[in-house]
Structures are given as structure tokens and as C-alpha cells.
Amino acid sequence: MDRFDLIKMCPFELSDADKEVLSLKDEEFQLQTWEHLKQIIATKNLSILQRTPSDLANYIRWYSETITQYGGVANYVCRERLRWHSASASTGFAFQSAIPFAHPSDFQILRNDWPYGLTRDITHLVVWSKTPIAVTEDLGDPTQESQELIESFVNRTFRTEIPPSMKRPDQLMWFKNRVRWQSVKAIEHIHVIVRGAGEELLQKWTGQTAEDINARKWPKRMSLKQ
Image (cartoon, rainbow, N blue to C red):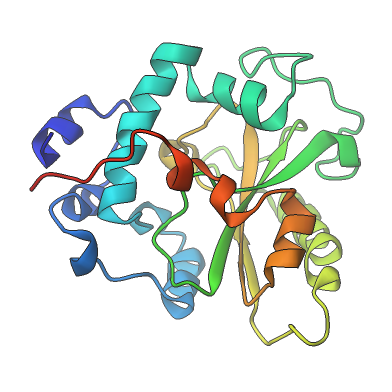
């Protein structure tokens, strides 16, 4: 399957940057650095975040197969990752607190199953929330109140947990994709990017190893034909 087939079959909107990536080989792809990520997040131009060519190609294939098997990626995430069986992504979830991230049963931290193409020192986490996160009507960015709630959550959950020996300036960032660029729109979530965190700490946060994500263990991983 070549890039044109993948673009044609893709069940979600690909950005121009994604389409460009599919024309590359992995060895031609430039991994995104911390400084590059800072610029992307600061300008909120999140559509240019990129996966490696092989990961993007396999993500498209996996996404299509998951829709066929589960009826949607959100259903897969609920059933296989979050184990939130009491409700569905389409009808919403019962939550303990109307304040996002206030009650531990209302959220779950996992590694991103299909992370962006980042340098090896950077890890991409996703925090899934049963509680809705208020966003602005015009652009879909978190409201000022939501930003403050998320920042407080990130501080107490992640920043305070990093041991002094691992701490470094400018170590952690978070963002929330606008709806247009969310591949799992039905479940609230934010992204947390951390660098220099040890594997033990990452496993404490997520309960997962680096090899547990779909991008590393999907049984049908294939190379992209040019």
C-alpha cells in the first residue's frame, strides 16, 4: 500500500504535514525536539505535530481496523484501555466531581498508544477524563478556568512527583487539541509531554511499560511502500 492509498483510506482528516510525512522514509524524518514542541504548543499550531512515517502509516491501518472491530476508536479506548464499562463514549460517563481531575476515579493516565515522532528523551502521555473540560466556543481552546484547573492538576500530579535528581528546568508541558485535530473526539483528554523522566516514574504514572503501547506491539506493523 502506497501513500496515496493511505491518504484515500484514512478515516480521519490528515493535515498537510501528515501527507508530507507519508512521502518520507523513517530515516528521512526529523524527530521533533523539545524546543520545536515548545514553539508548536505556544502557537497552538498543533496540526503540525507529526508521527514518524511508519507509525503514521500503521496508525491509519490500525485506526481503520479498530473502527471495523469496535465500531469506533473511542469504544476501543473505553473497553480495552480505560476499562470504563459503566457508560459509553457516545452517551458520556458518570463522574464523581464536576470539576475536571478533582477525583481520582474520574481520570486515568496512559502512555499515548501512537505517540508523535519525538526525540528519545521525551515521553508523550494522555490523561483521559470522564468529566467534561470547558472550552471556548470560537476555537475550542480550554477556557481560562479550565487552563487553571489543568495547570493545577499537572503540577500536583506530575511536577511534584519528579525526584530532585531528575528535575530540570522546562521539563513538562501540556496541551489540549482542538476538536478538529482530535483522533478520539468522544472522550475528553489532555496531552502531557515530559522529558527526562525515568522509566520507573513513567510506569508509576501509567501502569505501562514503553513496550505496552500499540505503536510498538501492533501485530500487523508494516513498512510504508514508497
